[in-house]
Length: 425
Image 1 (spheres, rainbow, N blue to C red):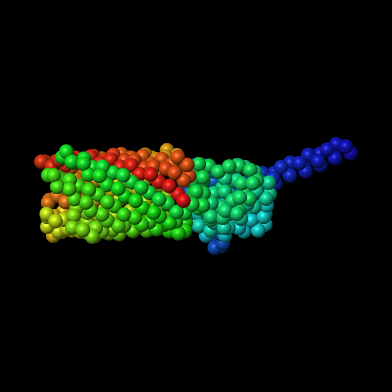
Image 2 (image 1 turned 90 degrees about the horizontal axis):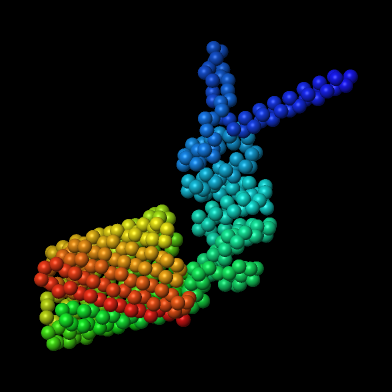
């Protein structure tokens, strides 16, 4: 009798193991139709896939991985782990509405699942829904996720939403602001800005000083308005001239789009343009790649030269590699009524920290900076500018640069120095 009982138990264990193995195989297999039978019916055979979802993802084959997940879901539609994986793949592919639908379907059944809450928060963030994303990350904290990166994400979202009261509560729970967040908070708390710039140009044994002062008001997280004026003195051949020019600028930033519009003009006939209208437009196509366009119309009317108008068109491509931004481009200047100047451009910016950045600009060709000095014809040359931006705190900083304009031929070079003090009030 004991032997019979042992035999029955052994049979039961073998059967259970076989069923468990069969279940695992079904979850990882896909259906493939067999050829039709003589009677016209078809059968389905189960074929083991050649590779796993993880291997496909590691190889970057997201479409194939997504197809395999969807085939597995057809066999087991109630498998929430598969559905979360599908949502994550859709999120990586940029199909955010579909990813959100899949992830929230699981979240309704598992409202305290940290992994699903984080995925929904990431998708909401990608879609620009900051408040819903914040709810997800705060929900993670509510169910016991005390990771520092989650705390920093909550603080970052509160700053982007400019919720200072919520930020105060979040900081009371622990942690501290990063350097970048300190500067972001300073912009919110101190919307007024004042910049004072002193410059000096050396040209053919002459010294041309200039002073520029401007004040700005941050209207919202997307709009900043700046107004100010420039005064410059130029001396050549023992004759000195002074010219001044007011300016008005508007900066806009909304999602992937950013723009700047500048309007200025000198009321006197001198070396500054009577009309200077500029626009700089850019759109982020990808996180590491964008497209930009620089437009400018200027009209000069000096006392000792015929009026000169120019139209500048400058397409450029900002490329972000870590902290470095590389912007190659082209500058085309039409000197009306017909001369055309062409220049290749390369701009570099290295953001060392949130408080400090180095930048450099290079132009080669019919230099646009030299044209602005009212050359009768486009003059070929090279321009190199190197500069530094540094904030001593969230409220006080400086900007310094040195420019060398080296035209070819019989023209004299220019050397320019500029130092600006910046503050937030």
